[in-house]
Length: 165
Image 1 (cartoon, one colour):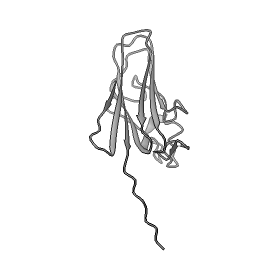
Image 2 (cartoon, rainbow, N blue to C red):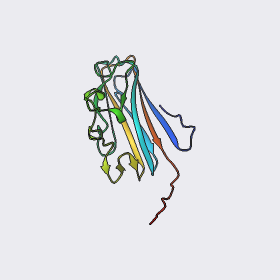
Image 3 (cartoon, rainbow, N blue to C red):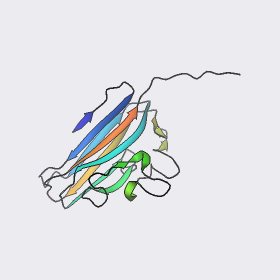
Image 4 (cartoon, rainbow, N blue to C red):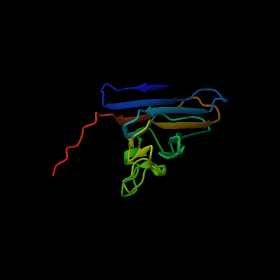
C-alpha cells in the first residue's frame, strides 16, 4: 500500500506501508517508491507502527544496484527498532556512532556522503529516474506487524546561474 502526501509542487513525501498478513506462503513484502528524473532525495524514514509477531521479520532498503544500500537487515520485532524510534537515512551515522542502530548501508557514511556516487545519483541528486526499494522478509505466520517507509524528495525549477567577471 503506498500513499503520496504531497501538496507541494516541489516537496514530495511518499509512504509505503508494510503490513503483516496471516499467510504462511506470502512472506515477502516489496515496496517501491519512484523518484522522477532531476529530483533530489532528501531522506528515507523507517517507522514501526506495530511490532511484527512472525518468527522473524526483517527489512532491507536499497535500490536497483544494491538491495541493502540504504539499510541492511533490520529486525522488525523490537531488537533494533522499537515503537517510538525511527531510522532516518540523513542521520544514520553521527560522529559518535549514534543513530542507525548498526543497520546503515553503504550509501550512508560518516564522511557526510549520502546516496550512491554514480551516474544515477550524486549526493542525493538523481539526474535520471530513481527508485527506493524496501523489502520485508518474514518467516512463520504473522498475526500483526506494520512498518512505514517514507521517502522525502524535492523537485524544483532550474534557476540559471549568472556569470560575472
